[in-house]
Image (cartoon, rainbow, N blue to C red; front, side, top):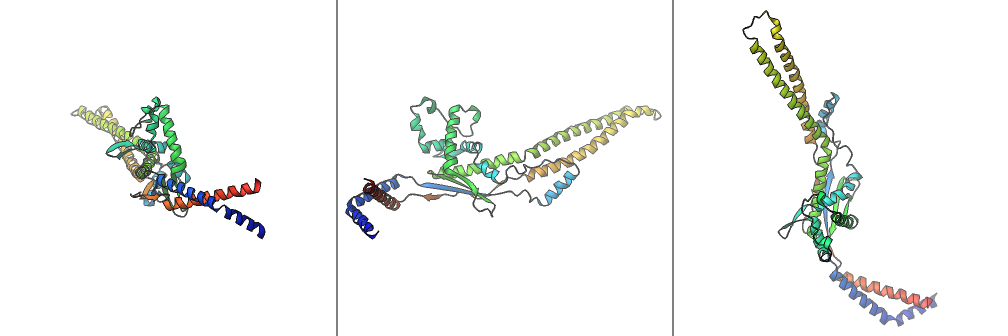
Length: 337
């Protein structure tokens, strides 16, 4: 073994010039790569999730109302709990709606999708393609007007963001804080996209979670208005019947029947209206309780975290890998050839 080690040692020693040359060339490639490679920026936004169990005294009031048969409209339940929430952030619908969010770049209002296309320099390659040259993603545009080409481009952007740049998760399982990490070569795009995604998901949550409460409140509002109209008509009917009975013979009781009927309607509608008003107020309390799920703790602040392949790293890694590759080739050559 010692003799074999000496043989390999003197063999590599005889090749020191070519190994050194390979290391030098690799160092040049590493330096060139470090100069060409763009820095990578990471935007991080952290938030906490609403605890459905922490209702306090309000939950007791709502529970008491439910025990009397009042359907005040529930929340979204556990539809966004746990891993469902993180998957919602990474869903194509949320990402595509975020890409259509308007942002201001160089005093111009464009969508995040257009900002991504400009950073990727796709417009230059589209100049010779008639189907792509006129494609535009206007801010807040509706997907109803999108063509198959629009959907295809958004699909490519979503796939790149989902696989390589967007990360959503809970860093510590003991702490209920979820973080969104967005990686991009454009510092502003990383910041804008991270904030817009959190806003988009928050709005979607509010709409979805409070949907039952809003529908219930709208129904109660219509019922209340209807009963109030009936009550006003009944009051007017009582007054009209009394006017018709004015100065008549009080022994003629049959003349009092229309007035008595209207009086019963007034009493019944009054009782119904009181209950509907109570339920309406409780429904408003329920709706106010439906606060946004996402409570932002930290937002991305410029300058963002910057990761760049340095010149020294390029020289060291390039030289080492090139030298190592040449050594492996020399071993293969000496062993098998």
